[in-house]
Length: 168
Image (cartoon, rainbow, N blue to C red; front, side, top):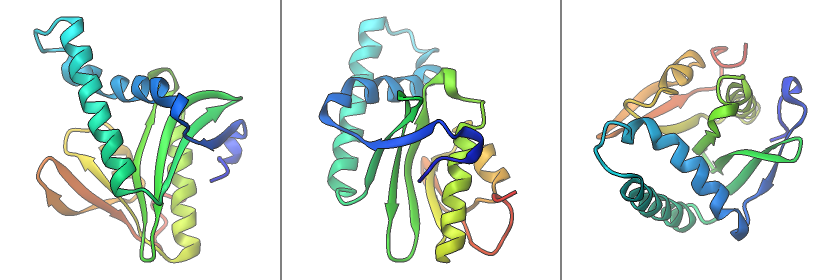
């Protein structure tokens, strides 16, 4: 991924062990709204988030060991993460998340469109698991992703090459 022309300052680098605190910060920021109504104190929320982050991180590192785990940089500042699997029959967006202050600026949309262009060029569908109540669901639908499988808490969504939904 090269970053879109609109965000020419966007680049990527592989995650490193010393990125764990940053990756945790990104993860925790994606769960703030979900945890807000709980009557837990800050220490309880922190313990829960840390446990969940470590479980997710280990899962990704184990089950997607040969895939790309990238830190998203804007002008050398880490602003998010994107994890991508380029498999024989599909491109899998394993995870994408930006820090809150970088959401809503078109950065994520640009990154997704780059993946869709890659899917178009390679003739491969792009797939992602999305939690049913994830606010980004509307973005994926707008880009032409459709639900292909209900997997309980998650939906497997797919964008197929040949359409123009996400490439405009």
